[in-house]
Image 1 (cartoon, helix red, strand yellow):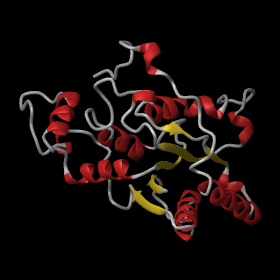
Image 2: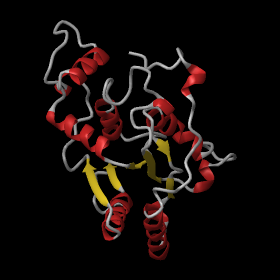
Image 3: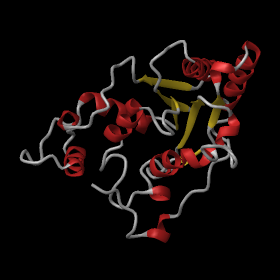
Image 4: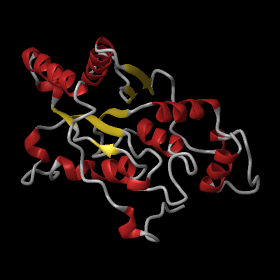
Length: 233
């Protein structure tokens, strides 16, 4: 397998850092290929603007999708974004490694999504969900959550974790064609013992070795929604 990990935590000694190191170590030891984009380490800018592009379609107005479409057709993305797009094309499996902040992605990772999953390269022209650009590839979220598991249940303050992650699973990953593997969730990592930490990392290593056959969420058949699926400007 070729695995692309987009890592979004600023502290290398964090549990997120430990999970990414475990994933990389396990996959390399079993003769898989791994590429990691450590967004904080490379200083990835989450702000999406004209710096995304080397080309210009309309200098008078920044129409994001129009510029993305034009850049897609004229090899016009900045070298940084092009490199990330190339990694997506290369991989068999994409992993988002991040802490859940305010029930969503950290800004740096959301910015990566906004800038890298561009019209013409990641979606568009009827290429959505089961017809998506990345159909045939898999994706997974590996997430640390500050609160206990009970807070993310049917009776908890935030509801089920699957509901919290739905916009990421369905609105981002599945939308561009990935088959979405069930997430790997670590609740309250700051409160776990050294023994529990070791057990969690072992389980994550086992998950890495099963990425190609792990169960995936149901895939939406876009034919049922033709004419209704569209990213708004």
